[in-house]
Image (cartoon, rainbow, N blue to C red; front, top):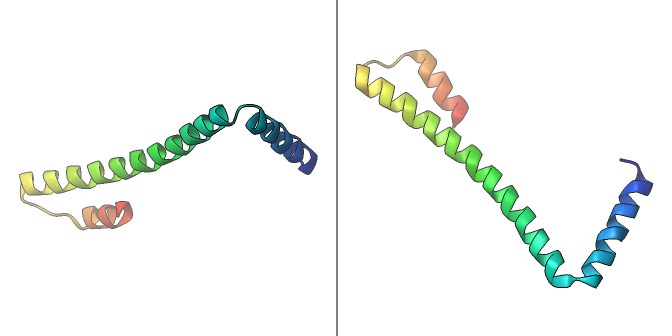
Length: 75
């Protein structure tokens, strides 16, 4: 994105914020919520992966060194 396109985009959003502040705040809040949802989704996937590895290790009573590497990678 060029500097001119960025400035145009900012100007457009500033005009939108002045025209309809409540709608702008709602969109901004939804966008922030989407960002947090993405972070929590990744965190949930990592925790689920760790739980699956731990469950597998406990079920079969063995712990492979490769699993340790995977656990430290997901941590």
